[in-house]
Image (cartoon, rainbow, N blue to C red; front, top):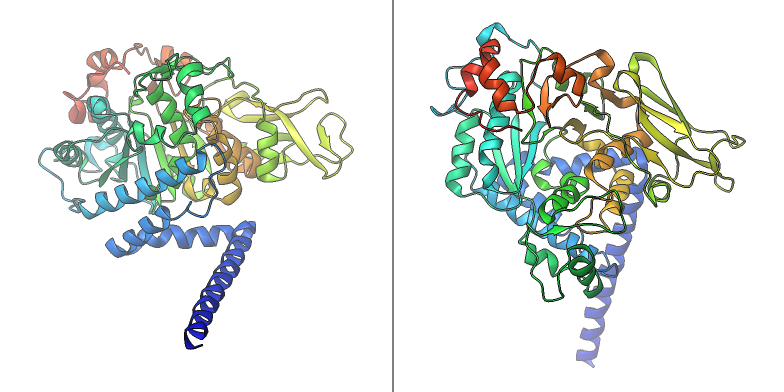
Length: 499
């Protein structure tokens, strides 16, 4: 009798704990899904790294357990997300436990002997909190390109502020390489995080059908074939996709969704992204971070006239994530895009008369580099938009972390190692849907930062011609470096790549 009573008390207590946990989770998710409260909740989560190692461990644990309540009924996608959450948490803890916390300028630093006022080019803008410069490489084989990009960006801009730097890599750097890189940019703080577990570990989260499709249909291998990061694969269901290495497809997936959730970015609000083959050519006379903060923007970009394609399911993904769409947009005050919802009687747009929602048909890059949305004709079935180029942009991380944006971007990576939904669409669509008036292209005010990428300046070919720039950056630098005092003094000997 006593044993029965004890068992009853134990199971009764367990039942009560489960019920209370379910109620607490329901209340939390209800709060999280309420848009006005979402930012406050996210601020609480992402503030967890503010207090040092203990807080960092709590943040790591938060990421490690983030996906554990999801069901694995989606062909391995959820298992993949769980795997990444745990991997990122463990790597984050390892990096920050072993981090070099010194902020002194190393003797080997490109900043040694350099002050903000050097070269008579003090920027004159304040340093803002919560800012990080981020980039990604596949491996240490890109070390020279990485150092070249960081050196040129420092000469053009970051010598004034020494903002933190985060480098993501798929294959690990050696401890000596990391120390060398940290010394190179000191006193700016630099962290290196791994963005993927080993490829074999990723492949284990595929279900049988998904792995077979990847091997045979996309990568042209037999069932017993061996996939490597260098394996060239295509996407037969996405005709516009070119055949690329699996590593390149992974970087698109990482930057589309997983980047925004990485604990290494949790303490930051603003992220300046620069590809490792995007090279500065002059001192920046405008401080884009200062404008980003002062005007509460969600994205700034050096725009490229990159035509996007209509993609199946884009409209349905927008509707599922946001429950609303954009009918039209016009350029309002201060050169910002202003989106207007459609009235129900509008006949020139797609209309769900049950919900009163509408769908925008396309968005393109108009005059002065602004994004312009246009309404759908009735027969149009899918959204189409021109895309913000991925080589450089500045994003408000808190905005992209908002629940509707995360739901939208998560739907992009249901197809693994795919460029159907890539990082360019990922940075373009969320602000167009929720905050078009807070998008800003440099060209709206004729700002030219002079970033060389793929033989163009700021994504525009005619600017390259105006600057007399060679297609290869290193050839231009060898000929013209005397005209850029800071770049010449700080980066001569580090410029080796064409770009």
